[in-house]
Length: 225
Image (cartoon, rainbow, N blue to C red):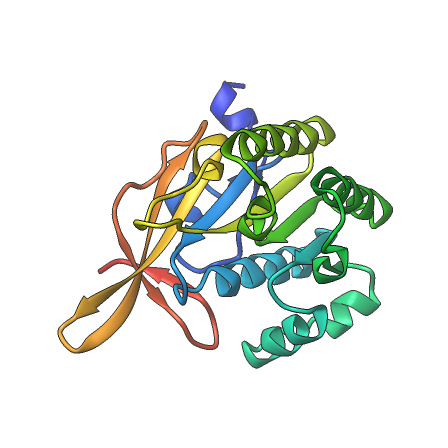
Protein backbone atom coordinates (compact mmCIF):
# COMPACT_ATOMS: atom_id res chain seq x y z
CA UNK A 1 0.00 0.00 0.00
CA UNK A 2 1.50 3.34 -0.99
CA UNK A 3 1.56 6.35 1.32
CA UNK A 4 -1.19 8.20 -0.54
CA UNK A 5 -3.68 5.32 -0.38
CA UNK A 6 -2.99 4.74 3.33
CA UNK A 7 -3.99 8.28 4.33
CA UNK A 8 -7.41 8.28 5.95
CA UNK A 9 -9.72 11.05 4.82
CA UNK A 10 -12.95 12.53 6.09
CA UNK A 11 -15.49 13.07 3.33
CA UNK A 12 -16.86 16.60 3.45
CA UNK A 13 -20.36 15.86 2.18
CA UNK A 14 -20.20 19.11 0.18
CA UNK A 15 -21.15 18.56 -3.48
CA UNK A 16 -18.17 19.27 -5.70
CA UNK A 17 -15.60 19.57 -2.90
CA UNK A 18 -14.16 16.11 -2.19
CA UNK A 19 -12.91 15.66 -5.74
CA UNK A 20 -10.81 18.82 -5.34
CA UNK A 21 -8.83 17.26 -2.46
CA UNK A 22 -8.28 13.59 -3.34
CA UNK A 23 -11.44 12.44 -1.60
CA UNK A 24 -11.68 14.56 1.54
CA UNK A 25 -9.86 16.16 4.47
CA UNK A 26 -6.92 14.26 5.96
CA UNK A 27 -8.00 12.84 9.29
CA UNK A 28 -6.06 14.21 12.25
CA UNK A 29 -5.03 17.41 10.44
CA UNK A 30 -6.02 20.99 11.25
CA UNK A 31 -7.96 22.73 8.48
CA UNK A 32 -8.71 26.44 8.14
CA UNK A 33 -11.64 28.04 6.31
CA UNK A 34 -10.52 31.63 5.76
CA UNK A 35 -12.12 34.67 4.19
CA UNK A 36 -13.47 38.15 4.66
CA UNK A 37 -16.82 39.05 6.26
CA UNK A 38 -19.90 37.72 4.52
CA UNK A 39 -18.08 35.12 2.41
CA UNK A 40 -19.83 32.12 3.99
CA UNK A 41 -17.16 30.76 6.34
CA UNK A 42 -19.64 29.79 9.05
CA UNK A 43 -22.09 28.47 6.45
CA UNK A 44 -19.44 26.13 5.02
CA UNK A 45 -18.23 25.13 8.49
CA UNK A 46 -21.78 24.35 9.64
CA UNK A 47 -22.46 22.30 6.51
CA UNK A 48 -19.25 20.32 7.09
CA UNK A 49 -20.19 19.61 10.71
CA UNK A 50 -23.74 18.58 9.81
CA UNK A 51 -22.61 16.30 6.96
CA UNK A 52 -20.01 14.66 9.20
CA UNK A 53 -22.59 13.95 11.91
CA UNK A 54 -25.05 12.55 9.37
CA UNK A 55 -22.26 10.27 8.12
CA UNK A 56 -21.74 8.91 11.65
CA UNK A 57 -18.94 11.10 13.00
CA UNK A 58 -19.28 12.53 16.50
CA UNK A 59 -18.84 16.28 16.29
CA UNK A 60 -18.11 19.11 18.74
CA UNK A 61 -18.92 22.55 17.35
CA UNK A 62 -17.49 25.47 19.35
CA UNK A 63 -19.01 28.84 18.52
CA UNK A 64 -17.43 32.06 19.77
CA UNK A 65 -18.84 34.86 17.63
CA UNK A 66 -22.50 34.01 18.21
CA UNK A 67 -24.35 32.29 21.03
CA UNK A 68 -25.21 28.61 20.73
CA UNK A 69 -28.89 29.61 20.56
CA UNK A 70 -28.36 31.80 17.51
CA UNK A 71 -26.05 29.24 15.95
CA UNK A 72 -28.73 26.55 16.14
CA UNK A 73 -31.33 28.97 14.78
CA UNK A 74 -29.14 30.03 11.86
CA UNK A 75 -28.25 26.43 11.07
CA UNK A 76 -31.95 25.56 10.94
CA UNK A 77 -32.54 28.48 8.55
CA UNK A 78 -29.95 26.81 6.28
CA UNK A 79 -32.01 23.61 6.40
CA UNK A 80 -29.65 21.98 8.91
CA UNK A 81 -31.68 20.91 11.94
CA UNK A 82 -29.15 20.03 14.62
CA UNK A 83 -31.68 19.08 17.31
CA UNK A 84 -32.09 15.39 16.32
CA UNK A 85 -28.32 14.99 16.01
CA UNK A 86 -27.74 16.60 19.40
CA UNK A 87 -30.37 14.31 20.94
CA UNK A 88 -28.53 11.27 19.52
CA UNK A 89 -25.21 12.56 20.89
CA UNK A 90 -23.73 13.05 17.42
CA UNK A 91 -23.34 16.84 17.81
CA UNK A 92 -22.33 18.81 20.89
CA UNK A 93 -22.50 22.60 20.59
CA UNK A 94 -20.10 24.44 22.92
CA UNK A 95 -20.79 28.13 23.55
CA UNK A 96 -17.37 29.82 23.75
CA UNK A 97 -19.14 33.11 24.47
CA UNK A 98 -19.41 31.89 28.04
CA UNK A 99 -15.65 31.40 28.23
CA UNK A 100 -14.71 35.04 27.59
CA UNK A 101 -12.30 36.22 30.22
CA UNK A 102 -10.78 32.77 30.65
CA UNK A 103 -7.11 32.30 29.86
CA UNK A 104 -6.52 31.28 26.25
CA UNK A 105 -4.90 28.00 27.18
CA UNK A 106 -7.92 27.20 29.35
CA UNK A 107 -10.24 27.63 26.37
CA UNK A 108 -8.31 25.12 24.26
CA UNK A 109 -8.02 22.65 27.15
CA UNK A 110 -11.80 22.87 27.67
CA UNK A 111 -12.44 22.26 23.96
CA UNK A 112 -10.17 19.23 23.90
CA UNK A 113 -11.87 17.88 27.02
CA UNK A 114 -15.28 18.50 25.45
CA UNK A 115 -14.18 16.48 22.39
CA UNK A 116 -12.96 13.66 24.64
CA UNK A 117 -16.13 13.67 26.71
CA UNK A 118 -18.26 13.49 23.58
CA UNK A 119 -15.93 10.86 22.05
CA UNK A 120 -15.82 13.22 19.07
CA UNK A 121 -13.64 12.60 16.04
CA UNK A 122 -14.11 16.13 14.66
CA UNK A 123 -13.81 19.51 16.35
CA UNK A 124 -15.07 22.73 14.75
CA UNK A 125 -13.91 26.12 16.07
CA UNK A 126 -15.80 29.18 14.84
CA UNK A 127 -13.70 31.25 14.96
CA UNK A 128 -10.03 30.92 15.85
CA UNK A 129 -9.60 34.62 15.04
CA UNK A 130 -11.82 35.55 17.97
CA UNK A 131 -9.48 33.65 20.27
CA UNK A 132 -6.30 35.07 18.73
CA UNK A 133 -7.53 38.65 19.06
CA UNK A 134 -7.34 38.19 22.82
CA UNK A 135 -3.54 37.96 22.49
CA UNK A 136 -1.74 41.15 23.49
CA UNK A 137 1.25 40.78 21.16
CA UNK A 138 2.35 39.00 18.01
CA UNK A 139 4.68 36.88 20.16
CA UNK A 140 1.80 35.79 22.39
CA UNK A 141 -0.28 35.06 19.31
CA UNK A 142 2.45 32.90 17.78
CA UNK A 143 3.03 31.06 21.06
CA UNK A 144 -0.68 30.44 21.51
CA UNK A 145 -1.16 29.21 17.95
CA UNK A 146 1.77 26.81 18.30
CA UNK A 147 0.23 25.50 21.50
CA UNK A 148 -3.15 25.04 19.82
CA UNK A 149 -1.60 23.23 16.87
CA UNK A 150 0.55 20.97 19.06
CA UNK A 151 -2.26 20.11 21.46
CA UNK A 152 -4.77 19.23 18.76
CA UNK A 153 -2.27 17.23 16.71
CA UNK A 154 -1.09 15.25 19.74
CA UNK A 155 -4.70 14.30 20.49
CA UNK A 156 -5.29 13.28 16.87
CA UNK A 157 -8.45 15.38 16.65
CA UNK A 158 -9.46 16.38 13.14
CA UNK A 159 -10.12 20.11 13.47
CA UNK A 160 -11.81 22.63 11.20
CA UNK A 161 -11.46 26.32 12.10
CA UNK A 162 -12.83 29.47 10.57
CA UNK A 163 -10.55 32.48 10.37
CA UNK A 164 -11.03 36.07 9.26
CA UNK A 165 -8.69 38.25 7.22
CA UNK A 166 -6.69 40.92 8.99
CA UNK A 167 -6.11 44.56 7.97
CA UNK A 168 -5.14 44.77 4.33
CA UNK A 169 -7.01 41.56 3.50
CA UNK A 170 -4.15 39.30 4.61
CA UNK A 171 -4.23 35.89 6.25
CA UNK A 172 -2.92 35.78 9.79
CA UNK A 173 -0.49 33.41 11.45
CA UNK A 174 -3.12 30.67 11.51
CA UNK A 175 -2.93 30.49 7.72
CA UNK A 176 0.69 29.40 7.91
CA UNK A 177 0.43 27.03 10.87
CA UNK A 178 -2.59 24.97 9.84
CA UNK A 179 -2.32 21.95 7.55
CA UNK A 180 -4.75 23.30 4.97
CA UNK A 181 -6.32 26.59 3.99
CA UNK A 182 -9.61 26.79 2.10
CA UNK A 183 -10.31 30.35 1.02
CA UNK A 184 -13.63 32.09 0.33
CA UNK A 185 -13.90 35.55 -1.18
CA UNK A 186 -16.53 37.81 -2.69
CA UNK A 187 -16.02 39.30 -6.14
CA UNK A 188 -17.97 41.60 -8.42
CA UNK A 189 -19.50 40.15 -11.55
CA UNK A 190 -21.01 43.22 -13.19
CA UNK A 191 -23.58 44.52 -10.72
CA UNK A 192 -23.77 41.20 -8.84
CA UNK A 193 -21.66 40.15 -5.86
CA UNK A 194 -20.66 36.49 -6.07
CA UNK A 195 -18.53 34.17 -3.93
CA UNK A 196 -15.69 31.95 -5.08
CA UNK A 197 -13.63 29.23 -3.42
CA UNK A 198 -10.05 28.03 -3.78
CA UNK A 199 -7.80 25.67 -1.82
CA UNK A 200 -4.65 27.67 -1.07
CA UNK A 201 -2.79 24.76 0.50
CA UNK A 202 -3.41 21.24 1.74
CA UNK A 203 -0.43 19.28 3.02
CA UNK A 204 -0.11 15.73 1.73
CA UNK A 205 -2.72 16.34 -0.96
CA UNK A 206 -2.50 16.99 -4.69
CA UNK A 207 -5.34 19.49 -4.47
CA UNK A 208 -7.06 21.54 -7.14
CA UNK A 209 -5.63 25.06 -7.43
CA UNK A 210 -8.36 26.73 -9.48
CA UNK A 211 -11.11 29.08 -8.32
CA UNK A 212 -14.57 27.56 -8.13
CA UNK A 213 -18.00 29.08 -7.81
CA UNK A 214 -19.94 28.81 -4.55
CA UNK A 215 -23.68 28.18 -4.69
CA UNK A 216 -25.64 29.09 -1.56
CA UNK A 217 -29.01 27.40 -1.43
CA UNK A 218 -30.71 24.36 0.05
CA UNK A 219 -27.31 22.68 -0.33
CA UNK A 220 -23.93 24.43 -0.17
CA UNK A 221 -22.22 23.50 -3.45
CA UNK A 222 -18.81 24.04 -5.07
CA UNK A 223 -18.94 24.13 -8.87
CA UNK A 224 -16.75 25.00 -11.83
CA UNK A 225 -17.03 28.48 -13.34
